[in-house]
Length: 250
Image 1 (cartoon, rainbow, N blue to C red):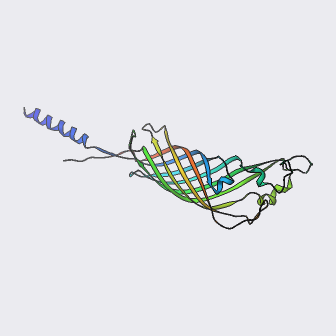
Image 2: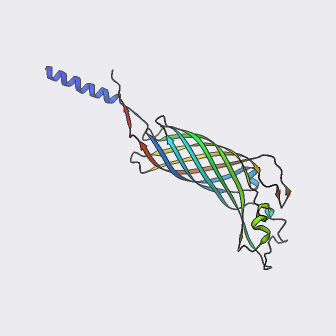
Image 3: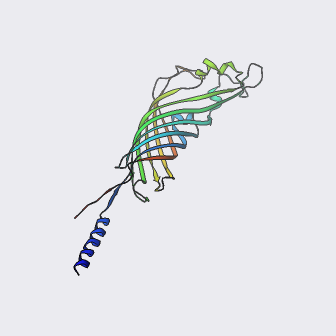
């Protein structure tokens, strides 16, 4: 009876210990790439249409599920909404540009930009398979550059190439803020790791060119631009020290 009594005490002690076992989230480096679709608002809505981004990011995830993140994004898009207005001082009455050969030139004007941001993210493990996954919110701050890419196919129109292109590219730059709301999934197998998020971008920028040929001298006033973004990120995590477990004894 004494042996049975001792065995029961050991079993119940182990059960109680397991019940009070508390896992903590992993520490990790998060390397990854992203792709996003964006809609321009504010002053940009007059220059940019729907555009897209590809990017790279590096994150340092803590056991507290806070992540410090450095992000780089490259923005690109198709022809701008008002192509003729961007070249209206060069076009013929039917909206074409004459090249050196006296024929119609092919000129594409596309959206371009690049963003660099540093941010802090927090993951809350709700509706998640593990403590490293769940709803994710983040705030970022950084710098943005944006311009119109004037592409003269054939390089046969001196009006829009070399130094003259600067009179049409609307190069601008300024500070950027970003808020991110999404869901992050870091699998137990460590093979499937992604985040789907909705992002709000605010950019306060100024024209870096003093003159824009279609309208003349540019203002030095700050423009307020916005992008609404849907972004998918794919991660390669490198975990540090494996999982940590804490044990409590009564």
